[in-house]
Length: 239
Image 1 (cartoon, rainbow, N blue to C red):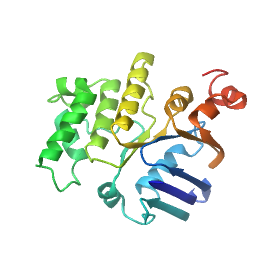
Image 2 (image 1 turned 90 degrees about the vertical axis):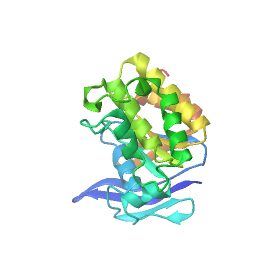
Image 3 (image 1 turned 135 degrees about the vertical axis):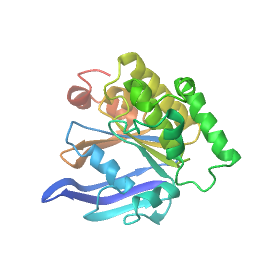
């Protein structure tokens, strides 16, 4: 396992947001967390990223316990996140946003950095077209591409994607998920939180269902997508 979450518990004040969840993310795979709003999916990603404090449990990255490692150091260790709501820097250009994704890197003027920028612009040709445009003037879909591209500029071993299809048109959702598959094929491990369960399960190697802060079901993406109870609860009766 490249990333392991063991017995994780997280509170918001006196309210338990996450209760004793345990799962792993194998290197080279896509793992997805699905569930209704308020299930704890985003809290899980924020905690893995270091943006929420752990009440108990452990987070392990490639054998190293990072439970209490500051968020910015987790980026240098190989974790980066594209947050829910995109979170681009609206007053900065596309290029400046991408540069911010590589802020923690020590090789910002290297050939590797240039190669990673080219990788992002190849994955997202629209960003190449908009490279000098201010991010706040872009469409929602373009901003989502930028948020994912910015996360990739950290050269992560595991990229955390939080609701990448939120608010997008169906045609663009298909495009985003196709690119997520390509990112994974290029060697980046993906942990995906997504409300579009049908699309997420279609591409996931492993999947976990969260309900009120607990994992209630786990399996391969295909297994959960083919289960009648999962279809009824999360897929509208069909995939």
